[in-house]
Image (cartoon, rainbow, N blue to C red; front, side, top):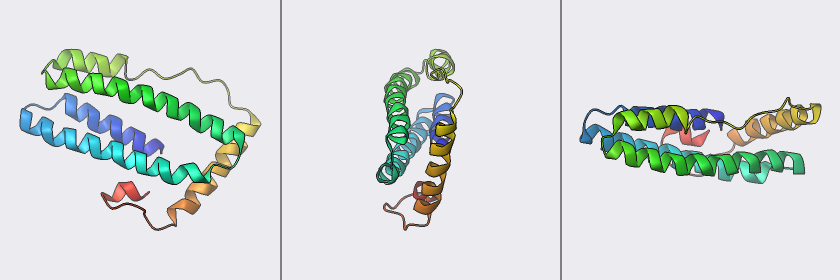
Length: 137
């Protein structure tokens, strides 16, 4: 999931730097495809959550991701209006804020290792959607 999130951010930065409307339209389609790919990954991940602590961590991610998507929509409006400098500053400042993390507990480390094992297992399942290769992780 981390790679998919990074992928969205990377393509969004390319969208901001697009030099013309054609390039911007192509990149916007790619941004939307990356969001759809992450949504598919999340749908495949959700049934694999087995305990309350893992569910809590995932719900926290989901809330933060919803906020990021709203900020990303505002960013896209700025970029479409060719306010590149404002969009760039918004991307670097507002869209990059992350919640403060506290030091993980032993239990969180255990949840993380269980999650990694479930992700490895889910990767062996056939993909549930068609699309770019990265969407079947």
